[in-house]
Length: 156
Image (cartoon, rainbow, N blue to C red; front, side, top):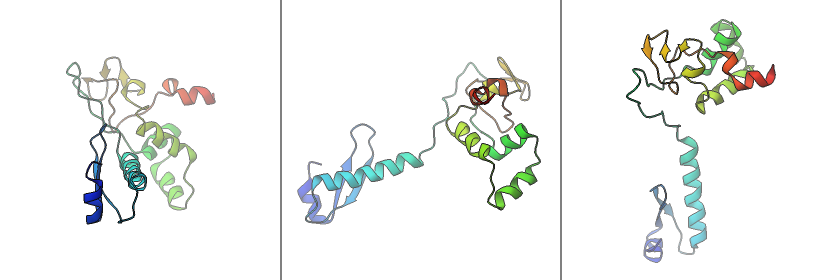
């Protein structure tokens, strides 16, 4: 914050992260200290990072299918449990969401569920798409092979 005093007089201070390049104009009063401004910047940074979605793996030219298009966690739950979607939807509306749906969402968000543990994946092809699939990709038709699910192995 090299221009801290000049900018503070205008009511904001521009703070930039040297690691990621995030630049934010943070509100600053005349009596604001650098540490207060930095704390406000960190709040903005953490909020930005919390809302950032994990990036899809970069396309790999060795594979015909590289997409990251995961299904909804409720869809995966219905496939795994053999439960009709309407039954799960009704439970969710009544505020009674199955615990497993949240765990599935976490696995999808953290990219733990992917082609390589799908029942339709036979190395190196996706039987559904009939394409050479990147094992790190995923599509809407994903259905986990529970033998490849580490959490399932732990519960069994």
